[in-house]
Image 1 (tube, rainbow, N blue to C red):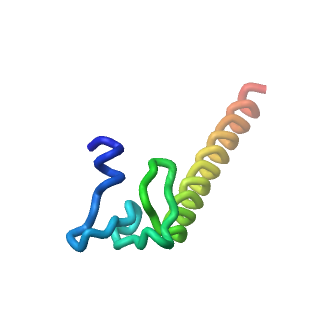
Image 2 (image 1 turned 90 degrees about the vertical axis):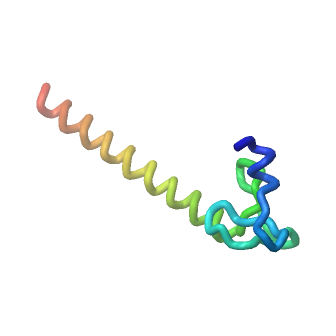
Length: 74
């Protein structure tokens, strides 16, 4: 699906739907995500925070692995 088609995706009621929760989004109160899609502010913030937490866990695991490897090779 092209970005334009995703942006223009609408529910049966003619409203845009949030790409995170798939619930209708009011254009008067929505925010726009990094892909240009109308989304609820709360949904967008939650998605961003979950990605940051995931990235932090991966980074921490990588650092632990590197520290373990360094201690074994020293």
